[in-house]
Length: 82
Image (tube, rainbow, N blue to C red; front, side, top):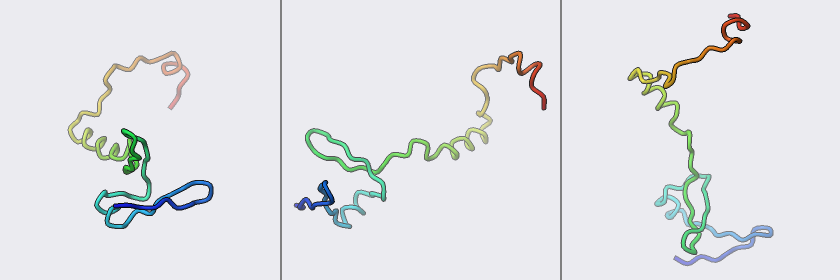
């Protein structure tokens, strides 16, 4: 499919046809990068998207424990009050 670059202020843009947007599963936020001389448009990544669900699953499996033992400090033992 061919498209024309259009002027958007001092930049250029293209209009993406709705069927392409739907087929690619694009949302309102995308990431652009160059790969092998081509401009690639991908959904923006959400690195922490499912952290709450993963934390709950860990809790349900009783896996949400400290990996290393806690080492109390002087502050913990003498200065801190509950």
